[in-house]
Length: 84
Image (cartoon, rainbow, N blue to C red; front, side, top):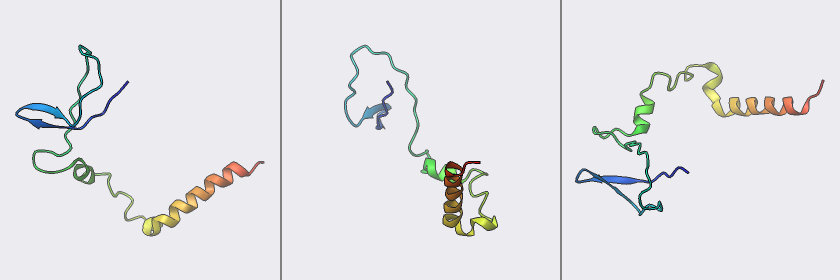
């Protein structure tokens, strides 16, 4: 079982938004994943700065990405219905 809970750091301790439903004495592994970084940058902001983000922006077929996706999905349907 994996639980995901939100909390805040208050006076150096993690305070969860609601009590946990685990039995007293249960050993747990805690992974801390800040929602925002100390400079105020969010995880999403950090994602946008990665070098691969937007790597297809200059491709001609991406000028209308909705049409491109619809075309790709149509190909998937052709593969499902065509038999040789």
